[in-house]
Length: 111
Image 1 (cartoon, one colour):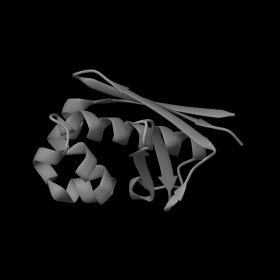
Image 2 (tube, one colour):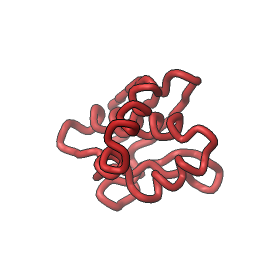
Image 3 (cartoon, helix red, strand yellow):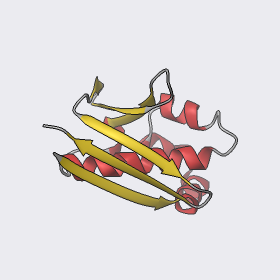
């Protein structure tokens, strides 16, 4: 078992979006992720949580993945899960949490 963790400041993600706009979003997130996050009253919390989850996954599997190869979605119960290169990553479990200022995510790889 391997564990990856990441914490991010919400303001960092918001500033990146304000500076780079849709170019930033397209480099990091899928259309489904963007649609989900912008359906929320504060999309930056969800964007930051997903960014943090992707970072934790990259840490747990190694640095050979890019952000846009990882997609963080929610099942029907709202629990997050990851797709890597379009396939559900059943061997990786993730948890995301956030406050007003920070988002944190943990990824556990069961080999």
